[in-house]
Length: 613
Picture 1 (spheres, one colour):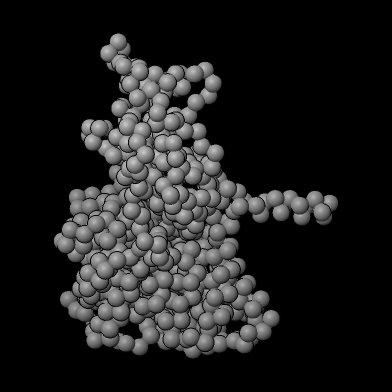
Picture 2: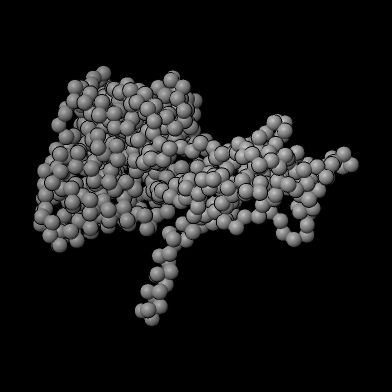
C-alpha cells in the first residue's frame, strides 16, 4: 500500500488542521450469553437422523449379542434370549470365550486396532485428537467385535460399544455433510448419547453423560443436537423395545441423619472399591505389556481367564442383566453375591487389560449391587435392593467420575425417582473418594497411557470475564508522527531499555500506526540508500493495525493478537485517542491473577494451621 494514499499518514505529513480518517478497532462479536447462531438448527435437524439411526444400531447390537450367545453356547441360530448358565456344554464351555477372544484379536490386528477396549475412551480420543472423525470400518467392526466378545461369555456391557458405534454414526453423517470439527463433535456425542438411550432407556442420564464425559464444553451448539438425538432415540425405543424401565424397582428410606450417614458410607465403600477395580484393570494391562508376544494374542489369554471364571461362577459371564434384577429384588444370597463380585471383577479386569472389546457400565452396576447387598447386613434396616441400588449408582459415579449421570441413570433405569437424595449422596461421596485417591479415572487413564493428558475441571475462561480496561497499561510511551526515520532509529538504538514496538500518534494523540524493532532493522539493512531525514510517516502505514477499546473483553483482543501475531495493541477511547496499551505480558498477568485467586485457599489453610498451633 502506498503510504501517500493513506489518509492518516497523509494528514500527518501535511501537518494540516483537517481531521483525517482514523484506523478503528476491528469489529468485535456482539456480546451475549452465547455465541451460537442459527446454524445450530441444521445440526438439530441432522440429529434427528442420528437419533433414529443410533437406536436402530442399539437394537441390532442387542439382537446380535443374543444370536452370538445362542450359537456359541447352544448351537442354535435363534434370537430367543437364553442364559449362558444353562448351556449344555459343561466344562467344554471353557473354550468358548477363548475362541471368541481369539477372533477379536484377529479383527483388531487385521481390521482396526480401535475396536480394542471399552468404547468411551476411544470416543473421547476421537473427539480430542481425531477431530471427531470415526471411520466406517470402526462403525462396523466395533459392534460386531463386542457382540462376539459378550456373546461368547465376555463379562462386559453393551453400552460402551454402542456409545462408540452411535458416535460413529453421528461422525459419519457429519462428515457426509462436510461439517466443521466442532459440529462433528456435537453430532458424534449426540450419536453416543442416543445409543446409550437406545440400550437403557435413560435419556436424561445420557445427556448428562455427554456433559460430564464427552463434550468438554457447555454450549447450545453442542447440547441442543444431543437433546434432539436423545429425544428421538427415546421415542423410537418405545416402538421396538419394552418402554418400561429396564430394571423396575421401587424402594426408599426416610432422610434421617442416621440414614444419610449410611448412604455416605455406601458411597465411601464404592469409591474405595472403584479405586481397586481401576488398579486391577491397569495392573492387568501392565502385565500383558510385559509379555513377549504380539498384542493380537492377548485377548486369547483374556478369554482363557474368562473361561476359567465361568467354570467357577457361570453367572459372572455375559452382560449379566439377570444378576442386576436379582440384586435389586434382594433374591441373591450373600455368598452368591460375594462370589459373583470376586469372580466377575477378576475376569473383567484381566479381559479388559488384554484388550478385549466390551463396555464397563453394566459390570460396574453388578459390582456395586453386590457390594450394596453385602453391606446391607451392617447398615440400618431397609430393603436389600435399596442398598444394592445405592451401590450400583455409587460404583458408576465414582469409577466413571460422573456423579450426576450416575444419580439420574439409576433413577431412570429403575423408575425409582423417590430415591433421588440417597442416590445423590452416595454418588457424591463415591466421586469425592475417587477424586482424592486416584489421579485419573478408568476412562482417562487409558487415554493418558496413549500420551494424551486431559483435565476434567471445567471453568469459565478468565479472559471472557475481564475487560481490556482492567489489564491495559495507561501510561504509554509513544512516538510522534512528526519524527524522522533517523530519530526513530536513534530511539530504538539507545542504550536504555526499549520496547519492541511503539504506537505512532498525531499531536492530538490519535494513533496512526505501530512501529516495531523489526521495522527499524529492515530500514537499517538499506544502508546508504536510507534517507534518515525522511519523515517516519513515509515508511509506515496503518495496514494490519490492530486497535482495541477499554470496554472490550480481553478474549476478543487476545484472539486478534493470536491471528495476526501482534505483541502489543494500542487501546483508544471514544475520541480515537490513545488511552492505553495491551501487551502479551499483560494478558499473562491477568491469567496469573485468576490462578492466584484459585490458589488462595492454600493461604487460608496456612493461617488456620498457624492459629491452631
